[in-house]
Amino acid sequence: MSQSTEPKLPEEDVPESVTRRKTLISFGVFALAAAGSAGLYKYIADSKNAMGVKRPLRLVLNENETVAKTYFSNAHLVPTFDPKQAARPARVNGYEGIKKPVTDDWQLQVDRANAEPLLLSMDAIKALPKHEITYEFKCIEGWSQKQNWAGARLSDFLAAYKLGTRSGNAPNPDQPDDLFKHVGMETPDKGYYVGIDIESALHPQTLLAYENNGQPINAQHGAPLRLIIPVKYGVKNLKRIGRIFFSDERPRDFWAERGYDYYVGL
Amino acid sequence: MKRIVHKHPLAIRWFHWINFPVLFVMIWSGLLIYWAYDPYKIQIGDYVLLSFFPDSFYKALKVPFRLAEGMAWHWVFMWVFILNGILYVAYTFISGEWRHLVPDRNSFREAGQVVLYDLGLRKTQPPFVKYNGAQKIAYFTVMLMGIGSVLTGFAIYKPVQIAWLTTLLGGYEAARLEHFTLTVGFVLFFVVHVIQVARAGWHNFQSMITGFEVVKPGDPERPASQPVAPVHPSDPASPTQPALS
Image (cartoon, rainbow over all chains, first blue to last red; front, side):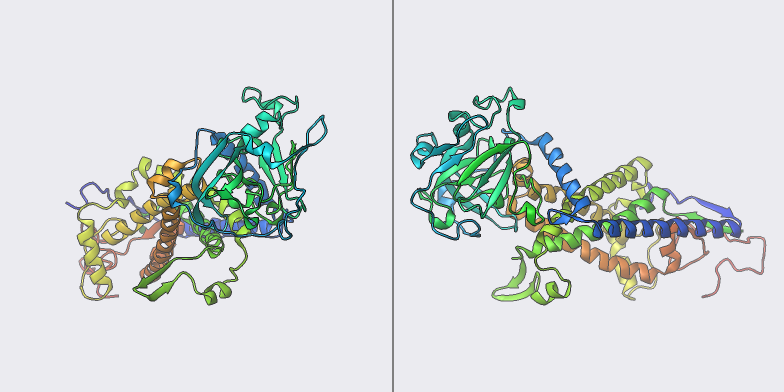
C-alpha cells in the first residue's frame, strides 16, 4: 500500500565491463567538475580588487543593481509605524564626517550644471512641506530599529529648486533622460560621502531630515540636516549634509570604496 | 553479467553536487554577515544554553570584520543557489522523480522504525523502493527549507521593494531569525546526512556519482518491497538468500 504510487527503480543486466566503464567515466567527470569549482574559486580569490572586493564579485553586484531597478517603484513603500513605537533616542552608529562640531556658518551647497552653486540656509529647507515617517531603520550590519524622522521630501526640494536635471527644469517623471543618473552628497569636511541613484533619491519617502522624535536632530545624528532614505541601508543616510551634486558617473561612496555593494537598495 | 539498478538520474546528480559547494559558500558567507550583528542565543531563564556564536568560534574560523566580503559572496552565489534549486524542483516534479521523494502518510511510521533500526533497537527495517521513510522526510524537508531560505532571504534583501513578503514572514527582524534558523537546520541536516552516508557505505555513496548500484540479492541494508528474483533460479545448489556475508 505504502509504495503503491512509487514506481520501482529501473533495473538492467549489463556486463561487468559496462559497469566498470560507466564508473570510470562518472568519476572522471566528477573529478573534472570538482577541479572546475576549485578553479572558479581560485579565479575569484586571485582576482584584483575592485573597490575593496574581488572584481568578479563586484561585477555581479553591479548587475544586481540592474535587476533590482526592474522592480524598483515609488509605489513600493517602507512599512510605517505609530510614532510612539519609535526608539528614544534613535541609535547612533558612526561618526565619520562629523567628528568635529558643525560650524556656525553652515549652509547647504548644491552644485548645478549651468549655474552658480546654490547656498541655502535651514529656513529654505523648512519652508518646504514637512513630512514625518516612523519606520524600521536598517543598518548594513544587520540590526534594525524603529525610528521617527521628519523633514522635507528630497523630491520636493529638487522640484522647488529645479535640480537634478540637465535642462535646469524641475525633475519630470515623463522625461527620465533629462535626469542625472546619480545624486552625490558629502559632509562639510568631506570625511563621509555617498552616491545615490536618482530613482532612490526621488522616492517619496526619501527625506532631508531635520527632526528626530519631534526635536531638532542632535549633533551625533548629523545636525542640522541629514539624509533619511528608507530604500537604502543606513550607510547611505548621510549626516550633516554639506554639499549635494548631480552626475551621470557614480559619485564616490565611503563604504562602497571599502568593499560594500554600491547600490545597497532595500 | 551484473544486475544494476538505476538509482539517481544524471540531472539529480548534477543538482546535488552543484548544490554542495554553493550551499557551503552561502553558509560560510552568511556567517561572515551574521557576525556583524549576532544576537541569537538559546537560553532558559537567565541561563544561556547556546550562544550563536562564542568569540572563540569566530576567531577559529577567521570570521570577524569580513561583512563586506561576506555580502559580496552571498549576493553573487545566491543566484546559483536559486537557479540550481529551481531546476532541481522543476526536474523532480516533471520527471516523476517526486514519487520517490514526497513522504506519504506511511512515511512517518516507517521513519520511526528506521530510527529504531539505526539505533539497534529493531532487527529489520521496513521495505522501501528508493528512499526509506526517514530519508523521504529528510530530503523533502530540506527541499522545502531551500525554498524557505530563498523566501526569507529575499524578505531581508529587499524589505521595501517586496515589503509584502517581509510582512508575511512576520517582519524584518523575524525574517532574519527565520533565515538564520533555516541555516542552522541545513548544518544539522548536513551532519546527519554525512554520518548516514558514511554508515551506508561506498556502495550507496558511489551511486550519487555513477547513478547506479550493483544489486546484491537479499542485502539486509536494502530490503526491497518485493522479493528480488534469485540470480540463478535454475541452480539448485545456490540458495536464494546468501548466508551472512
